[in-house]
Image (cartoon, rainbow, N blue to C red; front, side, top):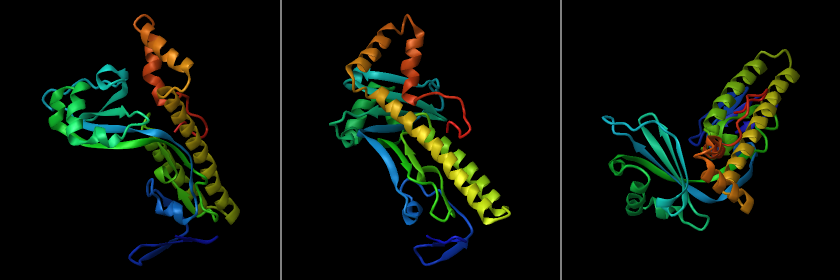
Length: 268
């Protein structure tokens, strides 16, 4: 990736090359383009992992599409367990302990041992995929290159934990805003106007990414409270939820981070 004030040249590994006035880089979390333009990711990550398992529903008898968050699941030694439905199945997300090796829960024998404790045993025959992930809160230090010719989008620009679908949804918003910025720049009456369109993209989408990063941080803080007061609030809410449904709603929704109305730069 070579950029100048006038254009971008992209060179592939096999030697082929392309030149363009602008490039939108959406090449994922390990973005080669991001590295090529000298941008880096800033932020933190959790000190432990989550294990996720995708399961296919029985097409003849699908279960209700309910999202359920189990705090300190008694059948899984007090780990948090989230079950989220998707089209044709559901995902089980288990929060590992800080000192725990996630590969232990992913071991085939171990997986078949603990999974029936949280879902119907019949799902053992319909395991689609299993993996682990850390809780990331990373945002690129800039969404554009120095010449304002390359625009980072999606996971090339930010990495969040998959709570609240913030990564995917903000990626859609990035793509839309990047397309608008490039279209505006290509029809601009002068270089300053063109540069301004790209800079506006970087400002807007960086603000949205920081919002999502902070929301992910709030979700992580809720799931892994460090203070005794916060842990006490969770236990108290769980105890009182049968009588005060709002407390149950708080426990269920809080892991997804703050809920705010769309703003000028967009919640996502």
